[in-house]
Image 1 (spheres, rainbow, N blue to C red):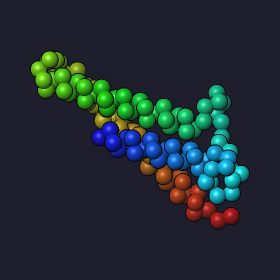
Image 2 (image 1 turned 45 degrees about the vertical axis):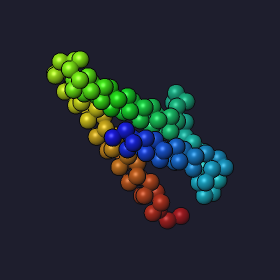
Image 3 (image 1 turned 90 degrees about the vertical axis):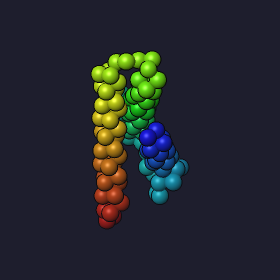
Length: 110
C-alpha cells in the first residue's frame, strides 16, 4: 500500500519539475503559482502525501502490534485502520481530480 502512495509522490515531484521555469513544461514560461501564505501547490500536495503515508504507517504498526499480541486494543486498531483508509481514499480522489484537470487543460485549444 505504501508503494502506491510513494508512486503518487513521484508523480507529484515530476509534475512540480515540469512546472518550474526551465523545466519540461513545453513553453518554458510557466511559473509556479504561490498561495497567499507562500506555499505552492506542490508543497501542499507533498504535505498531504506525507500525512497519508504517516496514517498508513501508523495503521500498519497498530495492526502488527495487535497481531503479535502486544496490544489488545481492537477498537483503537480498527480506528487507526479506518483513519488510514479514509486518508488513502481522499488522496486517491484528489489524484483523480488533478489528473482530470490536467487532461482538461491539455485538451484546450490555444
